Image (spheres, rainbow, N blue to C red):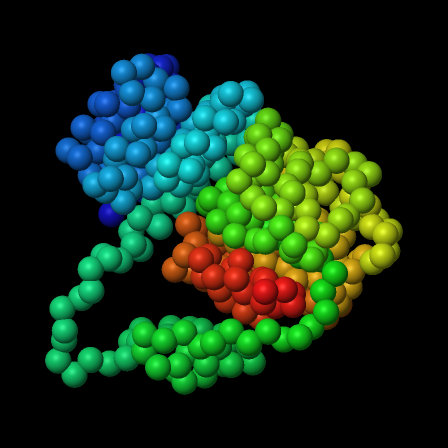
Length: 381
């Protein structure tokens, strides 16, 4: 069944352009359009689309308020479109905090090297968030069924042999009583740094984690979020006002300090140089056509592995694609540990799934538990 999209924008030109892009994909169909937030709320109730694309700034009711109103009654993924300005960044972050799923710049060329690639990325993003909607389970408990079978699993089809890690996870899952989570046991391993990578759904995930950490968190934290250059400064500033630890947009030459989170600036790569006892951040321009993401989780994880080797706790959060898998592999080769967000709490289970499917994940963790388990694992709290 085709993905049904509601397109919301006060610009008739942008509505028409977006409608053409969506309609040209056989897996999607435009269910309807709206030219302001109030109309979007009404059409969402009427059409019950799978995905909504939403402008931020509109007359009658803006996109932020429309997101709040729609999500009061329906669980529909909402993809925001925003201008790449400071005000646009702030408004987009407000929309994400209100419950929007993800965002894209209104100038498509700002997200890719050429027009065709940008259009393909837009379609991929819509499909990715739509899968999240289609996979959402009702919050009410299901009616009792006769002779229930605990944790039913579909018969595997053409699967490759399970890795040792997969087998251990399966044994743990089956050994854990229904409705109970296996208690988390810290490894006692010594760490020097935490590195976190994410994409789609990341702003809300990072805010959830970072704001739950104590001011005395004992390690520096590297944050890599796929985000345009105009957004990362505003996002770091927002996190800094909400968190107990210090959060800043990373700058070239920053010396890593405990209890400080460094957000990679958009459009560039964040690397490390130095030693475990004195390490600096290096921010590099990157014009390589081989690297899709700027910043890239793989680049930062790989650089962190070279400096800190087996003393890194890396966390791969929600996101589309597989960025972070290769960097996680290098970290594992040095002896560091990798955590991946679980499917149930991921907005898009792409990046965590890529790491887990490669057999690199040591712990799968729900978003709500990441901060408390981080505190426990690094020996604080």
